[in-house]
Image (cartoon, rainbow, N blue to C red):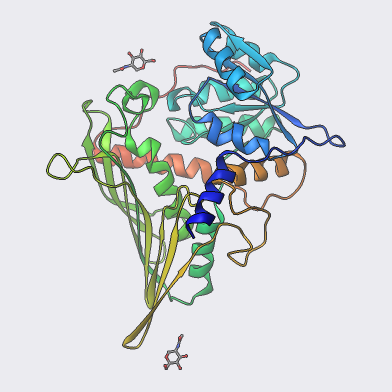
Length: 385
Ligand SMILES: *[C@@H]1O[C@H](CO)[C@@H](O)[C@H](O)[C@H]1NC(C)=O
Ligand SMILES: *[C@@H]1O[C@H](CO)[C@@H](O)[C@H](O)[C@H]1NC(C)=O
């Protein structure tokens, strides 16, 4: 058990590299910004994908780009004030990975699409639903691909709910909360103009998970309460209760810093989804990065007796579902698989549609309005494609 966990984590973060394919042209990726998320989200997953090469990186500071490229074995470097645009103009590059701060997602994704590149975009898509809509319209018009994915563990939870073994869904509760101290005060996640706020950074996951498991978009926001950070416009925490179709009630919470107990005992991260049904419940601990650890707990009531079982689902095969994968694949690796399948004209295991991405952003915006904080500022970028 401990050994298999260590082995899984070792393979997730230090996988044996697989050679790139010779018969098909590999896709060359360029990264906008020397971001800390890039290694787990793209660079490491790419090492085990035979059709992907991380080819270039751009950063405002050339030295930083060079150091990043050297560390990660990236061939080409762009820097300086025009570095991002030069990367977009590089004819060798097929796909742009955009992990820039939220508030810059719209501008640089629009510019990348205008330059004729596919885009793999970090969440949340943009600051507003209108901007997300425009990005997907441009991607469609240019016949380019833009995306976001679901780990097999959460798909297994959905399959358990769909099987009907627990009866009708009554309520869903999702939380994603980190202890205080996990983010510094000057973190970009607390910067309003960069699209900061816990409901932007973490709310996008809890909301997406709610809409996925609940099988539809909310119909009404019953309440939305923000606890501000040091900036009154930026939420440290957000809790919202939503009505969903079929009388389902959803409660979701995001928190970038739960206070320590008695001021000195660090609180634990809380990352969980729980679904209460007519004849039982199912919960998934750690729905965000199940590869690290997770447990699916199914509790089935039968008269006065109740039976509990636990499942671990690292691959689609573990969950008795169709799809490729290895137990050490991170959610990011599953996402890369789907993205490349789509670009190569194969059918991805999962695909999140334009409507789905726009709806997620639409409800994030509405929940911010309801909380009294208001939507995050629109980008000042005006596209001229
Ligand atoms: C937010 O980020 C912008 C752009 O990087 C910066 O100019 C501004 O000073 C930041 N604001 C705060 C409060 O840190
Ligand atoms: C419920 O319990 C009864 C009696 O023990 C059993 O026959 C039946 O199969 C159980 N139903 C389910 C859904 O497990």
